[in-house]
View 1 (cartoon, helix red, strand yellow):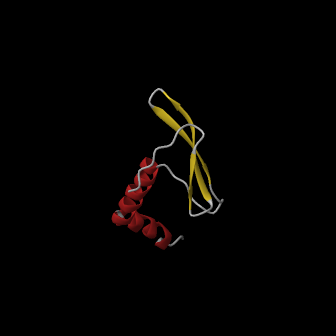
View 2: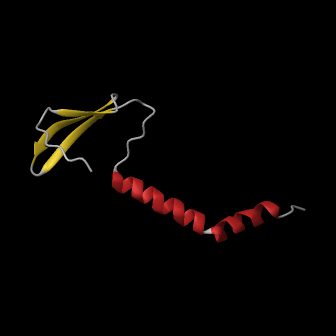
View 3: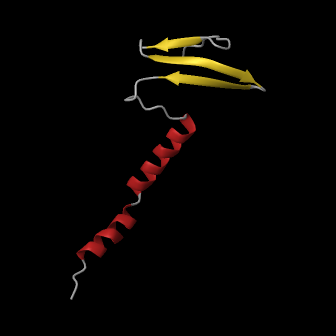
Amino acid sequence: MLILTRRKDESIIIDGNIEIKIVEIEDGKVKIGIDAPKNIDIIRKELYKKMQDENLAALNNTSKLDDVKKLFNKKTT
């Protein structure tokens, strides 16, 4: 992990096309601004982790999928 010190209004550049700028520092919180191409997904880590956990749970829960399959396999009279 690279650790850098930045002050308000200072920034870093990643891969020549992503800029991370310190916008505000107040009450122990840091606001950052991220300028990146639209094709780059930027997601907070806690949300990314939650998405991963939900995706794994969905993969491991085939019983609900079996119920849906049964609905489609029912023949109407």
